[in-house]
Length: 174
Image (cartoon, rainbow, N blue to C red; front, side):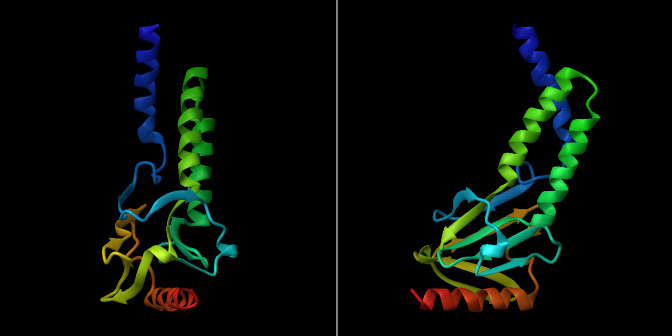
């Protein structure tokens, strides 16, 4: 039994590099203590949703949360690549391992990182960077890089300034 488990583990490790780049293996985060893992948000339901210039990441604002997640376009791309990898397998063991790994990746990419508006003191746009300041004065969403999109610099100036303005309107309404 130990030999079978070792063999499965080795096959899984060999297959991992074949999977597409996703938040599971291409995300760096230094989010701050107010950020939590949450369900994916529908951008249509957000008060404001902006997408990074490269199209990979969406930043959303609701009346209660600020959320960061893969854009719908990126989700579709990753899911398509995962389906392609699943179809490429020509043996039961490989198919099973890829299906398990792909299922885990799908579960992870369909999530967001969010922070309650009440836990943010302010959001500013300075020197080409979005800055999120927690209510304790500490940075939030600092050094967030998802699929090569830097949250701080990944958005157009127009979108970033629009986000700041809308955030402040939400904050003032509280």
